[in-house]
Every structure is written in structure tokens, then in C-alpha cells.
Image (cartoon, rainbow, N blue to C red; front, side, top):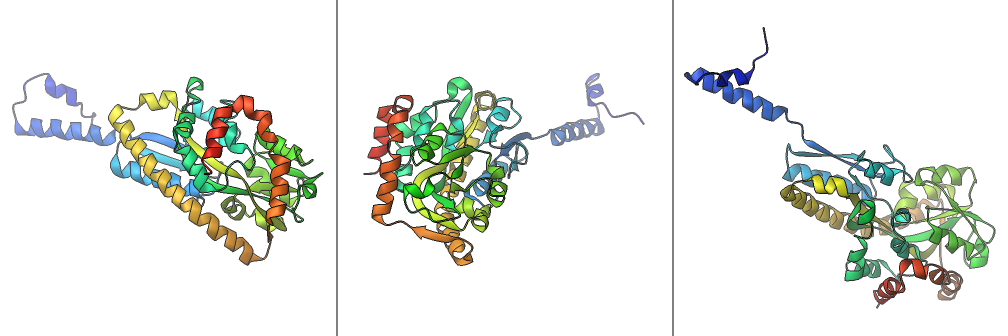
Amino acid sequence: MSAFNPSKLFTQPLKTLAQVTALAGALASFSVLAEPVEIKFSHVVAENTPKGQMALKFKALVEERLPGEYQVSVFPNSQLFGDNNELAALLLNDVQLVAPSLSKFERYTKKLQLFDLPFLFKDMAAVDKFQQSEAGQKLLNSMKRKGVVGLGYLHNGMKQFSANEPLLLPKDASGKKFRVMASDVLAAQFAAVDATAVKKPFSEVFTLLQTRAIDGQENTWSNIYSKKFFEVQSHITESNHGVLDYMVVTSNTFWKSLPGDKRKIIKEALDEAIAYGNKIAGDKNDQDRQLIIDSKRSLVVELTPEQRQAWVDAMKPVWAKFEDQIGKDVIDAAVAANQ
């Protein structure tokens, strides 16, 4: 039997109820067959992290509010792309959303190096205050000329140092190798304490630590716990020396391709998902810190005020090295957020 062609129904006037019914059914079937637009969201961390939970929340909200029109596919744990190539994939439209750490944008703008400066923010409240300020919001648009659109900041938390011996004073880091993200600021941070920074993808950190190819790393409590770094590091220094946050970004090409009304709904869903993820980040870091302590696999070391000040004194000169690239006005605005 030949396939039914609804266009033939228009070659002559519709005369019977059967013809009208057949046309309606054919058109309805075509509507059902229309594929939803797929939005691929790729990230490099586990689903039980703040970023992972945020991505799943975004998926649920979009598919609830635009049923059958848009489908969000989430790919965690570097399933599609690692943290060294996800931005390139975004610009090729192989994915539509990524949320790299702020360190990953160095090749697209030098201004976001701000967030890697050691001991710049005293806590996450100061980070959030700056990010929501006029200066912080302006940074979201700092990569538009490169085709990257910033949609919002996502928290992970404050970073801690880890190694296989206590890191109480800057001299304790001397001669050691620490994994860092691909950031010149972070490399300078460790050079300031006579340590070596090794730029490696996040997905390789556990193996590097386990095989003693590196001596230590820096990360948030939630990443240290979810990726089991605490199982292969005997000591974690509660330094709170830096912030590890992300920027959720898309490509200018994809963002402009969305109809205005749909773009508005998707952006609102993302804003809600980010707020949800940021709430989880605060709670999860506290919980995961305690889980690490309870595991007794790694000893959490708290610094005295004098010990912490020694780290500040050793690392703060890094600010001056990057002031021209970042902008003194931006650094001053960040410092003011600590008040």
C-alpha cells in the first residue's frame, strides 16, 4: 500500500467528513513527529556536585515549561568533552551550554583572571556580592567579541590545599608539585611559594595524586569529596585561599538563534537553576567537609591566624603581576565586596 500523502487532499475541494478527518489526522501526525530542539549541556564534574545538580534542575525546568519543544541533554563527568576543549566545542556548536571554571576563560578575556587571585575574597558572601554588582555583571559580557555569552555565575566554593604532609606555612609547599587549572595566575600563585604548578585536566587529578606524579592540589570540599581526592591525600589545609566558581556560557550564534520568547523562558529557567545550585554549593561544602573528617582518610588542618597571614603575605604580590591585565578598577571593586 502506498504512503498517504495529505497534499493530495488539496487537489480538489474537501467534500466528505472522512476527507476532513483524514487531513486533520495527517497534520496532527506531522506535528507529533516534529523533533524537539536539543540543548546539550556538557560539564566535567559528577552529578552529585552543585554544578551537576544545577544542570539537572535546568533540564527539568526547561522540559516542564517548553514540553515537546526543547530537550536538554546533560553530559557530566567529561563524557563529551574535557575541561580543556569544551569551550572550543561550544563555539563549534557541538554543545550549546557549558559551565567551565572561571580560570578556563583566560584565552578569551584576561579580566576573569580576577577570580584566581589568591586571598582576594574573604568568603563566599563577598564573592556573591561582587558577582551581583555592576562590575561583576559587566564581566559576563567580556567575551562577546569572541562569540561567548555569559549567562550567570555558579558557585562551587572556597578552595583548600591538599598534600601528603601538613601545609602549615608557605615553606611547606616549597619544591612540591601541585595540579592547577590552565591559569597563569594559579601558576604564579604556587611559584610565589617556590612550588611547581602542573596544568592538567580535572579528570586526571585522582590518578596523578594516586601515582604520586604530583604532590598535591587545590579544590573545594565538594570536589575533594566527590572525586575522592581525600582518599589519596593524607592532609588537607583549610586555607580558603581562593574561589572556585563557574560561568554558565553559551555561544552567541546559538543564543541569537532562539526565538525571543523561548530565549526568555530558557534564561529564567537557568537563573532558577543557578540559584538552586548555589544553595546546594553552600550546604554541600559544609557537609562534604564533615564527611572527609569523619572518614579519617585525610586529616583536616586548620591554620592559626598567624599561619594564614604568612600565606597571604607570600601570595598577595601576585595581584600586582596581573593588575594591568585585569584592571585595577576591577580588583578594587572585588576588594570592596569584602566590606
